[in-house]
Length: 225
Image (cartoon, rainbow, N blue to C red; front, side, top):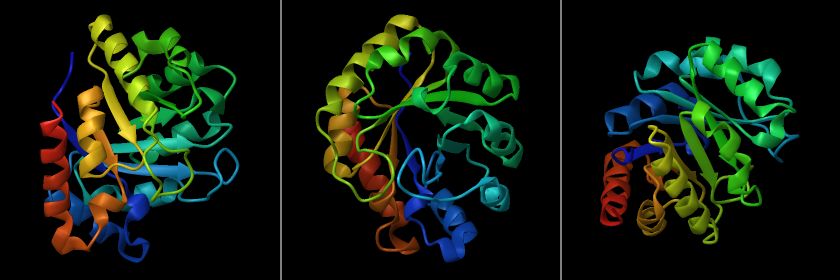
């Protein structure tokens, strides 16, 4: 069942010197999720934040914390991020040897489970676990850095996943992350996305602009519905 459009600003583009304030600001500006990109410098070529940062900012917002774990191996860290305040934990099929077991671990901790597909990862990678997950995240850039351009070929993947999710009859978020701006938001939603992760487009211009940034993304996305 397709849900309403939601916007998930990625704090990767926030001012890290005032991260708690930034989370409060995007919450007040109308965000639906707080998206947190966790990178280990190994699975992806960048190093970002750990569970202590998640714990430190958890009190800044009542929104769901949507934590994307771009780390390998991922299993040893799942409990720590869950305890720190993650509400959704999204992993990659390539980040551990047993994807189903990883999903069971997440769900066993009472958290929502997601699977992320890199640009070269096929839709088939998520099909065996579709009945166990709450979210599929399509990476429309190669993960590791913000500010990249949207890879248009991923629209076909979004469409294919939309068909799979609808056929399953389950409520599963279809999230897209990478190069999202008002132009690409429309295309992603038209293809079937219902959650848009936006870093640069959400945080551009500072706190006084956040509400307008989120409004523009939401309006653009709704034009694609």
